[in-house]
Length: 118
Length: 116
Image (cartoon, rainbow over all chains, first blue to last red; front, top):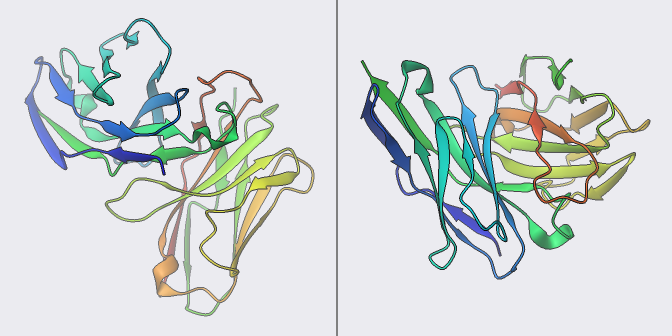
């Protein structure tokens, strides 16, 4: 069965510094997609970044980048130049490959609570 | 454009009662998902619709839970004989039908269900 592990329940970072949120995954399928979502205290899930298993380069979206190490099955999120508004829960997720990939549900980790200090 | 909307935003009910939670997906999105998020946990999959049919309902915890999407747009999650353990935030998400892996799911704000 597919599984997502986020080992950091909580993280603190100083404003303007970079932070790495860890995510490891477990799947035997060669094709998969990995996502990171942000969930502020208001509750909505906000898509941040996507990495495909066959992508040659690490994904980047503005201040977000993904440190994808396929052999280690890790997909860590790096947030550069942290801002106070980055304080939120962050979830790593993998699309369930059981449906040929593109339409399956997401499998989420337990999340990491990031707190940005001024 | 309008995002995924869910009503009500909050629902308080008594144990044993019946509740309905509504999800209105983004227009044109054929795929619709329901997730349940308990306190301190990530969302857990409940059911997935492709059009009007439930493509996968393997995440529904038991037969008290049922969901419909009769016209391929709005979906209703129905919970019978609610129990205190059903208390959670119920999230709905929708996505375009796409052959691509990076088919992003757009989430609604959720319905917070509290069973007393």
